[in-house]
Picture 1: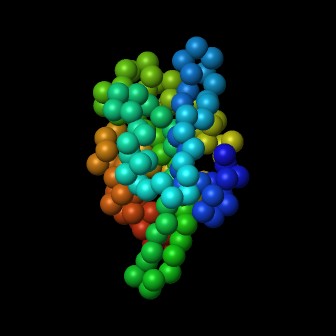
Picture 2: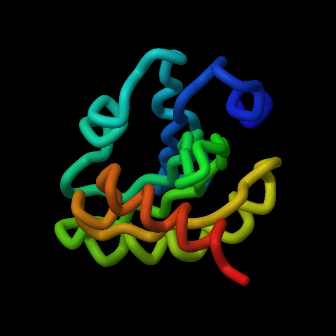
Length: 129
């Protein structure tokens, strides 16, 4: 999945789930290249945590295009505390296994991970001095 995400245009996003019993991370969803941001948001459960990697295309004021792989830690307010702790404990190890991650975004509701929030986050990282 990580290789597919790095290949431009092959996959737009992937969503991962941690199984409670084994603590193993499994692929829940792999998008198609044409799936939009709304599809991504619909895949995030309102009461359960997930990891996601999104291939975000950012266009700056000079009309330069940047594609950045963004690691998303989805931990909604409605998720059980046990589930939040499981994902928090797994995050760093799992993220270290993925290649090409440019930045991380932590989200607790849809506004935190909405397309405008993602764009602002990518822009803030790209324009740091």
